[in-house]
Amino acid sequence: GARQNDALDAAFAWLGNHGATEAAGFVLTPLLAWDADRLGARQNDALDAAFTWLGNHGATEVARFVLNPLLAWDADRLGNRADKLISSVLAWLATFHSAESADFVLVGVLDRRQPDDSARRQCAAWAMAWLDRHIETGDATHLFNTLLKTANWHAESVDVPRIIKLAGLWLDRHPTHVERRFVMARLLRLPELPDRAWLGVAARALEELNLRAGDTQDDYILSSVPVRLAGLRKEHRDLWLRLTQRWILHHGTAKAIGRLIWDCQKKSSRLVDAYVESLMSDCRQRFGPDFEVGP
Image (tube, rainbow, N blue to C red; front, side, top):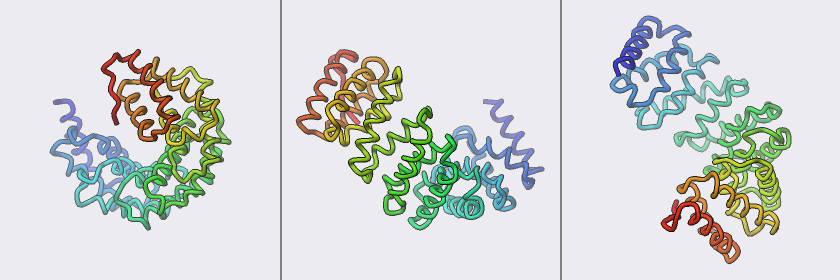
C-alpha cells in the first residue's frame, strides 16, 4: 500500500545519501528481507545497493547482515549476481568461518544449489569445525539440520561419518533441548547412518516423544522412522504405532498424515502393511471415508 511505498522511498532516499557507510548495512538487512512482491520495481535497486555496499564492506564481520538475507533470495531473483553472491560469501567465510556469527552464513550457502562440489566441501568442513567449537551451546540445531540435509543430497562433498559423530555428541550434551527432535529426525533420514546407530537414535527419539503431550510437529520423528521400521524391536514398532495414532487423532493435518502413510506404503512389507492398515482405520475415523493418501 501507500505506507509500504513511503517506507521504500524513505529507505532508498536514505541509502542515496548514506549507502556507502557501514551503518547502511543495518538498513539493507530488513530491506533485503522483503519478498519480490513487496519490493516490486525497486528489487534491482535493492540489489544494486547491496552489492555496492558489499564492495565497500564485504571484508568486515558485519557484512553477514547483508549476506544472510541475500542468501535467502533464489537464483531467479538474483539473476546474473547469483555467482557473485557465492564468491562474496566464500571470501567472507575464508576470514570469518570460525566466528561465532558465521553459522547463519554457513547455513545459507549450504542450502543453495550454486556452490560447486569443491566450494560445498570447503563450506561443510568449515561448518563442522564451527560445530566442534560450539558443541556445548544449544544454538547449533539449524546448522546440524542443514549439514545432515546436505549429507543426504551431496554425500560425496561431505564427511558424513564426522557429521554423524558430531550430531551424536550434541544430542548427548543437550538431552532436554526443545529442538533436538529435529536433529534426530534429520539423522534418522540419513541413509549412511549405520543400522545399529539408527536403531539407537530411533528408540531414543520415540521414547522421548512418548514423554511429551504431543503436538503437530510429532511427525518430524514419526515420518523419519518408516524407512527402517521393520528393523525396530517390536516394543518400539508398537510405540511408533501408538504415537502415530495419537498424532492422527489429535494433532496431524489430513495432508501431513496422508504424506506419512504414503511414505510407509513405499516401504511395503507384510509387517509395514499391517501397521498402515491400522493407521488407515484411524484416518477414516478422524477425516471420514474420503480420506486420501498422497505425497
